[in-house]
Length: 576
Image 1 (cartoon, rainbow, N blue to C red):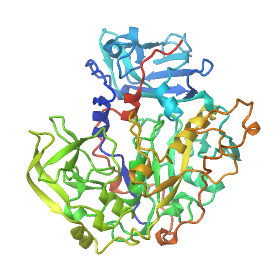
Image 2: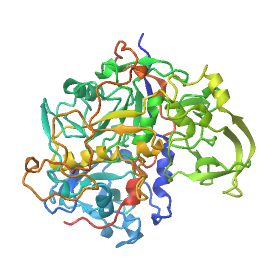
Image 3: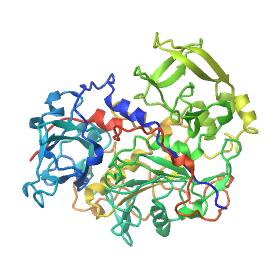
């Protein structure tokens, strides 16, 4: 019998919707003028190339908007929004004079007039200068608006995304050709997938939790050793589903588990992914952002503990393993969000006097104490009692009361799970390796090699979250107790420049300047994993082996963009 494979989707998609439209203390976002919705099922977009050098007049893109299932679209444009309101008004939401028009008349790069594919080529996208300075990479984000034949204006906020990278990283990352359309930099494994062996098509494809992407990991292990605890796959462009053209959301599949008494049975499905036994989980992450990566990595440990005591989230009476109950005050990275019709969205925080406050869902949170216990980072004695609220009263939002509350202690949790975690916090693994994999069906350009390499490097950050992003590093989220290493065991020189380092003297090729700054560590993973948490290998799963844990009833429609992308955007028109 094949053991069930464990998968977990990103936290409540409602949270994305609220985060994207919320105001923050640092960034004021003007509320968009309401427009009738243009259904996402009637349009999909492709940007070629998907990654460009920021502000480089020679690094241009072609954007195609494919209109599907209707013939009444007369005009198409894309807005480029600025949350500060700088250089534009709210007219940009519904007035093509403040957007970028696309054409279906055989001009502006349009290949065939009248085919319902609206195109604009030769575009230099505006730069996100703040993120260039902070991380070296960023996103350009646009939103679709249309005018129908009867003059009606419609639009949607699903988001059209391209990657941008600071030109100072040109030639910074050496690329090693591994053969068979495979290559690698120091931090990313690249798959050129012209035969669609990894993803069945680009950018319209079926990407489903637990049933696709297996070939990405097998290709990784075909040329690299079994040196990774976690593997993450990101498409090299936005991928949308053919049924509704909504972007696929991040998810995690737990591949193996040898930890005892955390609500998850021991299992090992590593061979299905090409690993000889070390791989613990795999993550699929949407294109162009890593904001949800730490949350998904947290699912490596499942977050199943205390389900009989009511600690798990439920939906329509079904327990949703992997996310803590939004009515608890657990909070942190792995909790579902409380939300109601009055607009309250967030995590409850216990004030210590039978009252609670609500942590907004746009706040950056670390792993909660019970998260850290399950992960083997802290002992059970450091986990405070948990409260499950009934009928919260928001009359005073800083002192929320409840009609009643149930207290759950760690003694109760440990007893319900048959004993304390094995191995204990003192014996568990704390340092983890991650393989960052990118796949697309066209060759990667130089900007893409740098863009994804910088993104992978950012995963190792030990800095607190930047106020203009929603990314929280694994190290920060664990309170410095755990580390994540994304340096691949490939024979390439270390990058000549990384965030925080001064720009090197310009050179024609990387080989002329291969030396890394002396104070910048060269991260290289160990091949051997701690044996205490590496179970024996079992028979591989079939590709379509399923589990009800991949259902996503929490995903209720709306935006599929990541909130940080919207909040960080600068609205300036692309140069034509």
